[in-house]
Length: 157
Length: 111
Ligand code: HEM
Ligand code: HEM
Image (tube, rainbow over all chains, first blue to last red; front, side, top):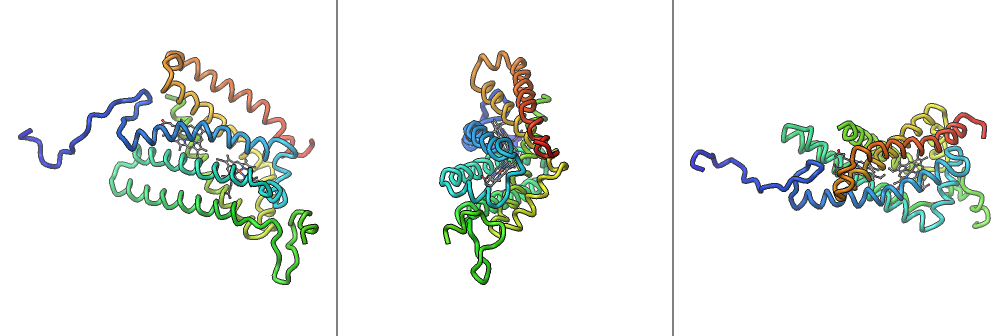
């Protein structure tokens, strides 16, 4: 020890795991979260794609009225919200792992992680606001329905 | 090794797609016409092919993700992990065979 200088970091012995990443407390949570959220995302996203891209008229059916129809039900609001949060944290954490692997300089790692956190937070907040403040029948300044609203808006008025 | 490259590349691609996807969906809070205009461009052939690529990326990342989970937690899967790579590609091929004809006929007109 006498030759080791004071800046030598004290590294806990890390228990290797099969996929090759080392474990400590935070990384253990990260590891578990990536797997738990992965399984949930498989169900959430495949259903999302099946409904929006495969059934009915596929992409051609998507317009404002289609979204209004889906978000009329709290089930799809919650579905999209959970999908938004899990996918952004899973993807964001995955990007963090990549930054750790590829960004060599400390300042570079710090900058990229700050940008990443800001990006994930902005998208989660924006996406959540969009889902929960959605208005299926928006009006223009003179109180008329805007063009493109679903037909049920006429009945509601 | 190859699957690791595939898993990383698809993960990053999906992440950037999702950021753009939330931004375009946010147009429903601007006006129905703004949203319909942008979604309209997604129905063109070029975007139709991009969407097919996105579905391919999701399918590969998802099936391979399940393989990673199994191999990390289940000794049997670790022993057979090479065979499981083929299962991933097999499931991927099946899904694309089911999806592509229908999607492309939506995009290129017809049914
Ligand atoms: C569809 C269901 C999904 C499953 C089953 C899944 C599974 C996984 C698993 C198990 C890992 C961990 C790999 C490791 O620790 O070595 C992972 C990593 C990752 N995932 Fe996903 N994932 C899914 C969806 C997504 C989505 C929607 C995104 C983007 C928003 C994404 C982006 C990433 C990224 C960037 C990584 C890091 C890659 C790496 O470190 O090599 N994944 N995924
Ligand atoms: C080309 C394929 C896709 C199409 C056509 C599509 C279409 C849509 C549509 C029409 C909506 C509006 C609400 C709804 O219908 O539920 C939406 C919302 C959403 N989609 Fe997708 N989607 C696609 C792929 C994906 C993928 C791959 C993901 C996940 C990685 C995803 C995640 C989301 C999320 C989180 C929302 C809610 C957005 C918000 O909070 O404002 N979508 N999508």
